[in-house]
Length: 155
Image (cartoon, rainbow, N blue to C red; front, side, top):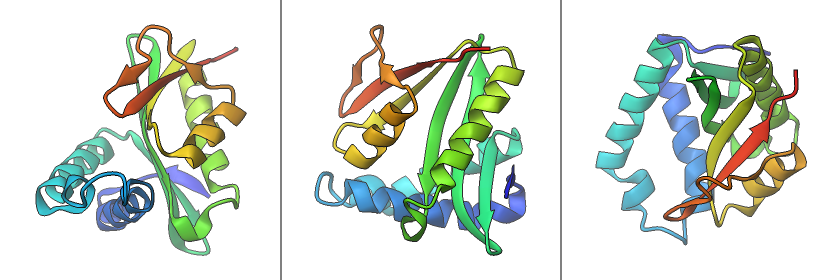
């Protein structure tokens, strides 16, 4: 089931986000950069603000949080700022359900294009997005160790 996140979900959202990020950042970045106290506090504040704006979707399976996505539409361009699935739920369709829900919301909001950034060494995520039609962003292909991707949203 896909639903909007509430303030009651915040602890579970932050824990899932931290667990998912740890799986693809570990070994590529120092732990402090994705799991240190300052980063965890920054992450929690960001998720709290996004939940407060009604910009976070939760995928729930068997009564547990299985994935989250934070998104918005800015000036007609959709932005997928976060999409994370609990590693124990990878390859079970959770990410696809969240992605499809975001795309439907963007289309309903009138967006014709979407943008995201993905960690360049996260090959699993890069393959996931490529399979859904995301292409390198010609206007902003790179931001440090992240790649910019875009998706044309057909009506």
